[in-house]
Image (cartoon, rainbow, N blue to C red; front, side):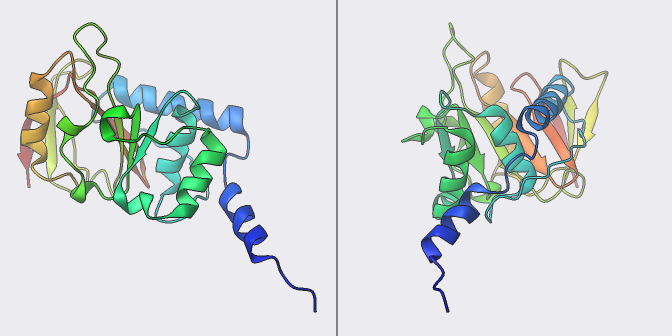
Length: 210
C-alpha cells in the first residue's frame, strides 16, 4: 500500500478552512466589527464559516482574517501559542507577523480570557497617536449568559447591556483604569458563537449585575 506523507497532510490541514470567498467574507466580517464598535454592547450576528485548528474558534478566526495583514503584528495568548497548527494557519491566511511582546501587538488574539494578562501590558498608543494601541480579540463562549455589563457612552442611546463570559480577571476595575488613560488605551472585540460585540475605550461600564 502507498504510504501517506503525514507532514503533507498536516500542512494541508493547517492551510485549509479559510474564507470561501475571501473578499466578500472579509468585508462582511469587517462591517460587523465596525457596526459593533459604533454601537457598543450590541450583538452583530455573523456567519463565520472558517474552520481553524483548535482551540481557535470560527468567529475569532474570521475576525482575525478580516482585520490582520502583514503590517499588523499579532500576539497570541498562551492557549493559542502552544498550538503550532494555529500559528501556521494564521500565518498562511493573514501574513501577520508574530508580535514579540504584547506591547508590540496591533492585535491580540485571546482564547482564554480568564487567564489574560492585564490590559496595561498591551500597546496603549500615545497622546499624539492613540490609534497605535492594541485591539484585543477575546474568544468567549457567550455574549448573553455572563454577568450583565451596563454600558454608557458614545454610540449608546441612554444605556445598553450585554453579558459576555468568560471575562478577564478584575474586568470592571481594569476597564475603569483603561478609560482613565483616554485617549490612550485598548479596545475589545468579543467573538462568540452568536456573533460579535465590542467595547471601545470610550465606553463606560456603569454596573456589573449578576
